[in-house]
Length: 239
Image 1: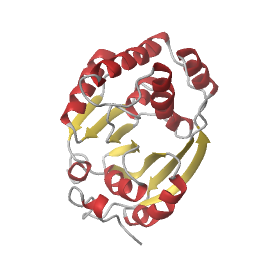
Image 2: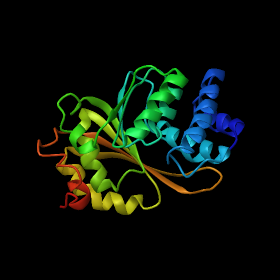
Image 3: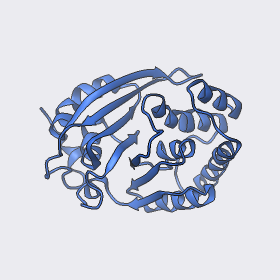
């Protein structure tokens, strides 16, 4: 996907980018490749693949969720900034918080935000489990998202404690999504969530499967969740 295809396909979905926003994506790509030589940010460095598999794929959440309002968003385990930074570029008014467990990635994200001149972005070096127990952040966000972090039964415990009541948890998934949803239903319910929408589509060009689950926070998360670091992955919540 070259930049022209990127622009055209987003416009087909009702997302129009200015020349400034296109320049931001181009600089994002340049910085990603430069920093990737110093640290492992991504295995994908070909420009057309970055535009398709990182930028377009990240923005696909906005095809199904309305980001036009004044939302506060938390991105759990964003790595090199996906999906929240591409979404922030498209919707500059959003307030974005990223939490990641690796300090090197946080250093990259701070430099990225400075170079792209993004405001209302905050980056925290922390484990999602401890971040979700911190009263400064717990149940404070309108929308929490994550992409390629963990299976849904685990991811729900990392994300739902951060969502305010009546807010949304948006999980971006690949090919095994249906199975993950079945295995994650118990955790979603225990943590106060309810599946509101499920969307399936194919990524353009390569036709790989994508799913987006929109989970509504219906009740407060019990205080014991998230459990201590590592526990959700070792012992996912079961029915």
